[in-house]
Image 1 (cartoon, rainbow, N blue to C red):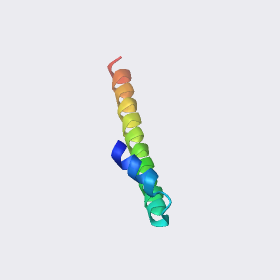
Image 2: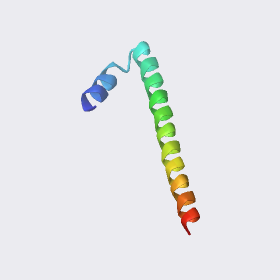
Image 3: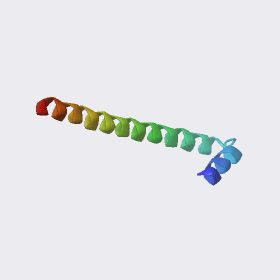
Image 4: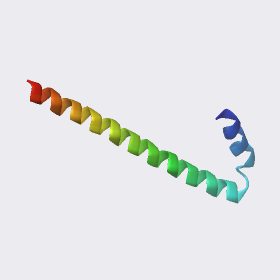
Length: 54
């Protein structure tokens, strides 16, 4: 990860790398949103199960 970051910093002056970097950041943000939604879904399901048990 660190090596990739160093590479991106060194090459970020090149427009095609900047475009790729923006795309990569969008993909990462997308996956983070999906993961947090899945976590939320799990916690909501857990809470619903808890309520059913009570």
